[in-house]
Each structure stands twice: as structure tokens, then as C-alpha cells.
Image (tube, rainbow, N blue to C red):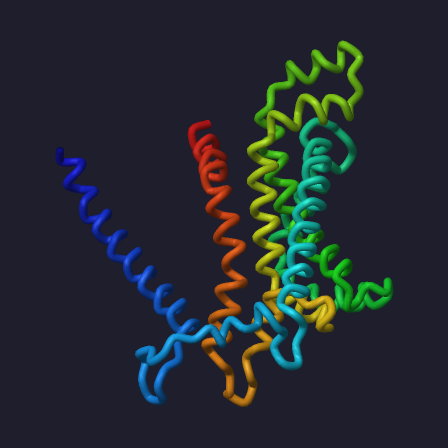
Length: 274
């Protein structure tokens, strides 16, 4: 009973904070479907004008659906490449002994800790040399390279928890290293692959600085850059339109989280239990 008394203040506080956030987002949504009289904060009439960008492009800008397609391609490509390369590299680092293995592990850890923004000029020059500047492929490669260190370390941790017995038994029976990795190891580290895929997708979807600098053209624009382009430097920003596009940008991530939260919590729950 005393334990319940101690948890009540926490529950009340969390409920109160959740209510505040709900009201803020509700007002955020309300502002996108109403107009306000000058000098007031209360809506005066209902309108869907701020959502018109779903039907026709905003003047002087790409279609929102073209930009959304770019963002989906961008985030999905980053996810697939990061998951594949991290799972293969981490397996080698976990199971194979080769020269400078420890130095390589330390190097990628330092690389991940290094502020990525300081690499921006060097990356810009490299992409220009290889003809990848202002292309979606170039930004995909850059974000993938920046996400790989964390992905490799994450997957190596999962591989390290898998016992050697099943792997060695399969190799004794004549299974190749690739078959062992594909049929025996990957199923056992599936929670790690799933968690890494979620993190990589969210990182790709939320990337802003590198797409802004390395792919500035409207043809390869992603939603984060598109949203920032709606801010008028002269102070004439349509904030209701800005909020509507912001909600559109947020919605896929919310849906993605709702469908994956149970599995993601199982990953962390299993890790904590282990």
C-alpha cells in the first residue's frame, strides 16, 4: 500500500504534463484549420486553405508529394544500407580475429564521437569531385557513413551475446561462413536489427543540415528542408501553413512509432532483463 502512495504523485505529474502537451498539439492542429481575427489568438472561422498544398503545389515550390517521395527514398535507402553493412561488419568484428581489430573498433568509436558538422566542408569537396553534389545519392551515402559507427557497435553487442556452440556446430557440419551468418546468426540478433532499422530510419527522416547544404536543388529536396524554406526571411511567414506542413512532416513518424513501439520496447526490455 505504501508503494502505491509513493507512485501517485508521479502519475499525477505525468498526467498533468501529458495534458499540457495534448492541449498544445490540439491548438497546433486547430490553427491549421481555422483563421484568426487580427490581434486575437482565438479562431474565428473554419478553413482548409492551409492544407491546400496537398492538392496543388505552393507557389514557387515543388509538389509536396514529390518531396515526400524523395524523403521516403532517402530514409529507406539509409535504413537498408546501414542495417546491411552494420550487420555484416559487426559479425566480422565479433567473430573473426584479424590484425588491428581493436584499433578499428576504437577508430569507429572516435569517428562517431567526432562532431559531424566539422566534416561538412571536406564532404562537400569529396561529393563535388565524384559528381555527387546536389544529388540524393550523395546525401544518402553521407548519412549512411555517419550512421555506420553506431550501427556497427550496436550490432556487435548483439552478436557478442550469441553463444558459439550453434555456430561452431553448423561449421563442423560443413556450413559456409555466409550460411552460418544468414541462417543462424541473423535470426538470433533480429531484435538488434529491428532497433537499428528504427534508429536509422528516424535519423534519415529527420536529417536537415546535410540535405540542406549538399542537396539544395528543389528536385532533390526532402521534407525537412522543404519545411524550413517556408520561413520568410522578411517576416511574412504564413505560420498556419507552416504548422500544417509541419504536421504532415510529423505524421509518418508518429504512425511509424505507433506500429513499432511494442517491438522496440521488447528490445529494451529484453536488454534490461539480460
